[in-house]
Image 1 (cartoon, rainbow, N blue to C red):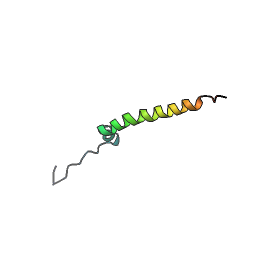
Image 2: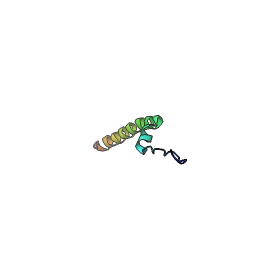
Image 3: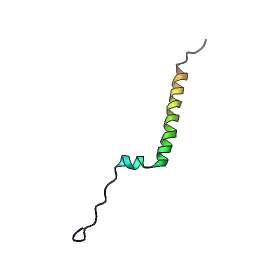
Image 4: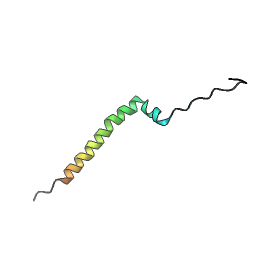
Length: 52
């Protein structure tokens, strides 16, 4: 640090910031399976043939 230079702050990658957030991981861990099972259930119900 010669001549009054400021130290350069290292830029944190966006993916690391995302994965360091425990509340976001909790939210994703709850919502993604819920949405996928919901879509899967809707597809299963839609594939059942109509009874006459």
